[in-house]
Length: 149
Length: 193
Ligand SMILES: [Cu+2]
Image 1: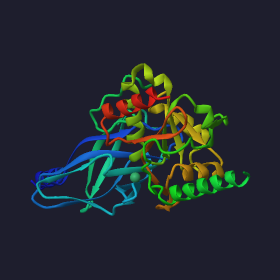
Image 2: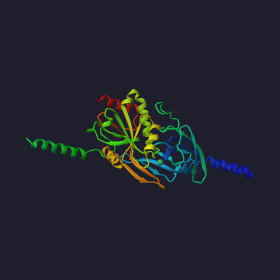
Image 3: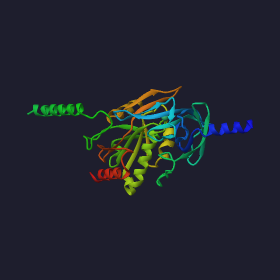
Image 4: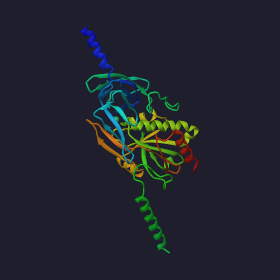
């Protein structure tokens, strides 16, 4: 009985947000950083904060937003958290928000899958596989142009 | 007799001054703007690459850094897709990735990075002086910004400058343009002497 209640509670926590389409781009040996993009859906009727992430493949992970200045200059700005609205979703996509993997332990090779645990405001974690796509991919389903190695 | 060239020189200087005063400051270059712009950089083998060594090729110049996981891969991926759409004309097109972060972008790293996008993309670096001169020549902004821990990021211009076969700035393209539009732009430039 207690066990069932515990499992139910766990299931509720696990489904706090749903992550789909997570992808990263292949990196070269020695490259220090990679971005992870994904869709984070919040089916609950309360807003949920994404406060960070961890991966066995990165020494450090941050949340970033790319901003463009009036002069066309691009910059990445650290975000303390990302709010996923109730019954809504936030798309982390190139040119906007991304999860920034720093201090990569090894290059990300195209076609492989890496792990990512996304941390929520209440301390729970949501695990998602991250597919490593072609270095120039702009979405999770993009095919690599036939030209490229 | 002898003062005429002096007057002409003065007029030319004055015009040049005016041109400089009204030159666009950000990243957007005007089409068919001025003369060839001299520059000197090095490839990942240490060989000199200059504006004159690239004459006859349409050059796509992109300035970025490998510690840039969002904007740079998007633009280089775009360059790769444009090159693919150009068919045989790709042989007369030279895409260059010039690092704005020579401190971390070693030749070895650059050598592995550029071909991830397209085999024709050549990565270039240079001495701090050479790079500063190139940024100035092409109106590129590159600012080091402290990040967390030992990391730093670079604020940088992110448009692709197209040089015609004489080394003149002929257009600016970027991933917000359709592939077809940029292919047309590049073919137009290739068709001109
Ligand atoms: Cu970032």
